[in-house]
Each structure stands twice: as structure tokens, then as C-alpha cells.
Image (cartoon, rainbow, N blue to C red):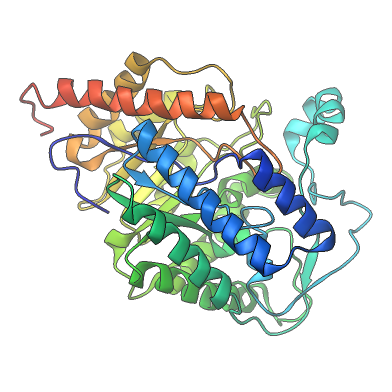
Length: 394
């Protein structure tokens, strides 16, 4: 990642609301297919438009909006890996709700109203054969589309969001490999090809892993904290296996507690998993910090040292509300983190994607752009404050 130099840079988590005409094209593609000579030019044009809009909003490190992924942020991997096949959900499963979590038990009436409004495209796939990476053509297209858009835009650099092994198969049961460990490392080895190719292209690879913190809520109880840490530890080892030899400064790791604007009363506290997160061998950590359930956790960094040479990308804009953050509030949040970890080690980010896949938007697109503009303005205010004073953190 580029060094901040003399200002706070801005970025976001990756997924952006798709333009309506492109969404309708994706619907047709999913339902009955769209020929490449129609789909590929439309995708390239949509990526060019979204990168231009990010630049206009003042975002420095931009993505393709995840427009090249026709299904969910994690399940797209099923389309780029061999060895998976669809299967019927178990009796305890219900579409995207493969396993219930404790929030659902406390607020059942809310979820009865909420879930039908979510147009998620996730299905249950099982691992039924050897896993290999097969998404070379789609990955090449995503890289080329983003780089072409960046070349004619005033931005610092670009990143592509990709999925971590733990999240890629979070709802895909193993019906082929002998052990859970063998399964997760096979996925990691395959996804390594995606990570490496992105970095070698000159882009940043952002590894998305929302299921890592979310799984705590699905495991504990009835399991114990130790059960969860054992589960998570193996998956972080697998991710580091996938990242071996890839320059850390060209990678970043993103966690959140789910893009759903749900109660979040049973989220695992950051202080209980921050040591696990920092074991991931990347150059930056993008962590949700604007959500009203997690904003207070900036104080975790009073006791936890950010490793030397690493960058913290706190979410200072929330995706869970249509209220647009005031730039002064954004600046306050950024200054808090800068005073704890050093101004050169902070990039302003968002909590999560503004769209969970192509058909689920978390805020109206006009509000999304207003939020990103507020992020950029807040970063300018924070820069003026942080670079106008001498402090021990500089």
C-alpha cells in the first residue's frame, strides 16, 4: 500500500451499489444467461463509471465495486474453484441461514420481517471433489477492467476484494476431504493463485473474512471460547499458507461483524479476537469501527500495539445507516486512531461493503456517495489537524 506521505488517505471495503441497468443485466444473466458480447462490454463500462465516481468523491484507493462477481462476496469463489456441487439444505438450514445465531433467538419477530426483504443469492454447495483454482479468465478480466479504469482516473491505486479460505467455505460442508484441516488448506492453496495474481498485476489484494468473527456467534455457546479459537487458529494458519511469499505491503485483511443492519447484540468483542487478526501476515487491517455496536472499540488500540510496518484501516463510515456522517465526526474518529498508532499508519475506511452482493444494497446509492464524500472531507480535516501539530505519535 502507498505510504500516506503527508496526508490521511481514503479507501473503502470494496462492494458498492451496482447501477440499476447493470443490476437488471445481472438478473438476466443469472436467470437465463447473457452472451459475452453483451455482458463483458457492459461490465467494463460499469467498472469504468464506478472508479470515476470514486475518484470524484475523493477516494484514493479504489476498487471495481466487486462488479465482476455475479453472486455473493464469498460465494463467488465457488464459481472459481473446482470440486463443489449444489446440494439440498439440511432440515436445520434455511437458504442463507445455514446456522442460526443468538441474535435471532432474542429478536425473532425482527428477523421474520427482515429476511424476506433481503434478496440474497446464496445457495448451499458442498465440496464433492478435489479443489483447484479455475477462475483464471474471470480474474484476468477483473484485473484488466480495474486497471483500465484506474489509468484514466485521478486515484492513488486500486484493490480487488477476494475471499479468505474460512469465509469461502463457511456454508459449504466437506464431503470429500478426510479432515477439516485438509479441506481448509486445499481451499487456501487454490485461493493463493488468486491472491498472487492480483498482487503481481500491481493491484492490492484485500482478503475479506467476515465469517471469522461471525462464527463466534454461531459456535459459542454451546461450544467454548477455546473451541472457537482452535477453529479460527487453523483457518488463519491456512490463510497465511495462502499468503506465503506474497509481499505483505500489497495485501490487507478485512473483518467485520456482517453487513446486515441487524441488532448485533451478540457480536464477539474485538478485544477477544484482535490477537488472531494481527497474526494474519498482511500489510494492513481493515476493521469495522463506525458501527454503533463497535465504535467504542477504538480503545482496544490503547493496549494493543499495531505491529511495525503495518497499516490500520478503521471504518469511520458506517454502512448500516442512511444517516450521513458529519465530516467533523469522521475527522475525530481518524484523529483518535492516529494518536494511538501514528498518523502515517492510518488510512480512512468504511465498516463494510455498501452492497452485499449484486442485489442487496445497504444504503441508497445517493447516500453511499454522500458518505464517501464525507469520508474524504473528514480525512482532509484530520490531515490539517494531525500535520499542524508536533506530537509524540508522529
